[in-house]
Length: 297
Image 1 (cartoon, one colour):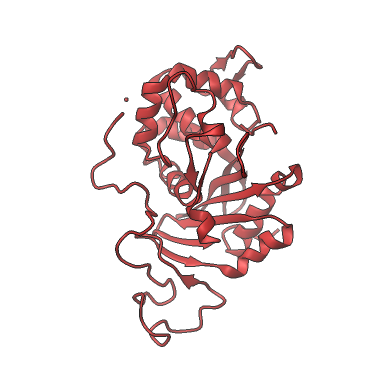
Image 2 (cartoon, rainbow, N blue to C red):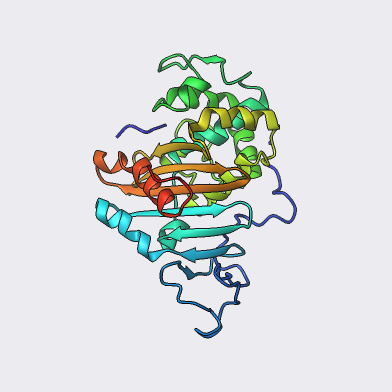
């Protein structure tokens, strides 16, 4: 199946992932701010139609079991995370799946582009890249397509040491980029893996231009990721599809801006057929509408 597609110490005080499983403390209910472990009376109104508070580290989180029907009705297994970058709260559909890591596939084009620009290996998003095996394209042209060779060439230019350093700085998933000489496959077949929870928080830093690279590079990438613009919102996103892994992860990650509000999202499906992969964006949009982040059509 075809894919869509310097070592540094982590920043002080930053845990490896905002959603570190098993972190001390408890999730806070989004309804009334009541502490976990209280009685039903402590939790206030019935939460059945809103969601159930769950433990996912230091982020206020609720599980929306009702929205699992979106995946069931489509005949797929999936997980979805919606992260509110303003109040650091999250809504999760299938929390167990949201914790699991998988290869990022073409969603790794986001950090790969930033690293290439920051290291100067690519002058700008319009520089034409000429891979040995593949079509000549710029990053602007390659990012929204299924092209892989351009980004493999870019990864080779960056090199193993610098790639490892920057993936570590970004706190990106398990931070594993494999062995030197394997720069073309680590995000497609492993060992690099990332969870939906980690995708959503990484994208939040990108959307707010808070990653440790020049703001101009983050703004350039932002431009390439824009999917649509409406009267009251802007939608940014990128898909990804794993290869030679089991199960095959199908990703759609991005964010929605509504005025001052910023919500990032990460959807991952277990892809068993071509039809499953085609549902990534449509199911993500359905969930974003249900959660009132995108307007209903």
